[in-house]
Amino acid sequence: MAANKSKSQSSLALHKVIMVGSGGVGKSALTLQFMYDEFVEDYEPTKADSYRKKVVLDGEEVQIDILDTAGQEDYAAIRDNYFRSGEGFLLVFSITEHESFTATAEFREQILRVKAEEDKIPLLVVGNKSDLEERRQVPFEEARTNAEEWGVQYVETSAKTRANVDKCMIDLPRTEPGIPKLDTVLRCTEGHLPKSRAAPRPEPTRFGKQRHLVATEMSISPRRHRGAGLCPLLRGG
Image 1 (cartoon, helix red, strand yellow):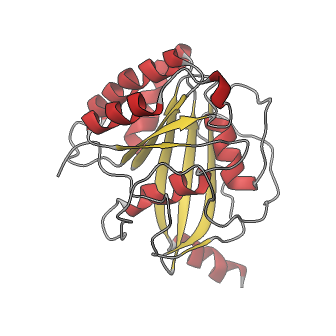
Image 2 (cartoon, helix red, strand yellow):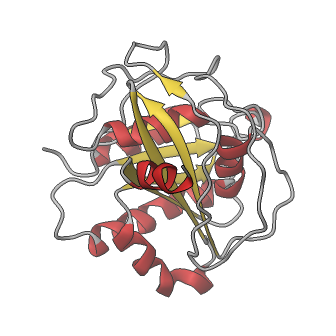
């Protein structure tokens, strides 16, 4: 029985998502909120943590593998290796820190350089900490205009309130071949896709050693959600 279950899980489509951005913007908080429905405010700076979650996407069971990378400059050299393994990227900054927004251009260039041989790279620009509107340093229109110049879409999230957390993680695999895309992109400040119950948390493993976690399934239907959208491609086509 266990062998059959393992074989079944290994045959599921696997979508590898890489979290990219400066230190302190909330990449780990977004990841943990998606995995466990839990907001972790104080978190040890990440070196590289990998998580895996099984979801039902448009009626098909798939696994989403999330690599939460380090934002600190000290780890810039090893990021290339992580980027090579990625199939899609969430480029995260904090709306309360304009410097982290400026840094997204450098991260994007690094992705382009590492993935130069690929014609299409799914990428979504994420402005996190939308619950801290009173501390906003990056205007929504500025961030959206910048994303449009790159040919990608922009969404704002809050790891604290969970706003748009599921949307980011689920929309990214939709841009890969064979996955239907949602066809509307709006700024969403209310509501989010269904939560999944928290899964037991193992001890962290570092430097890309994957935590093969199978969390409670989420079922996402190919309907149009208000505020939901597709994550278009880093390059056109």
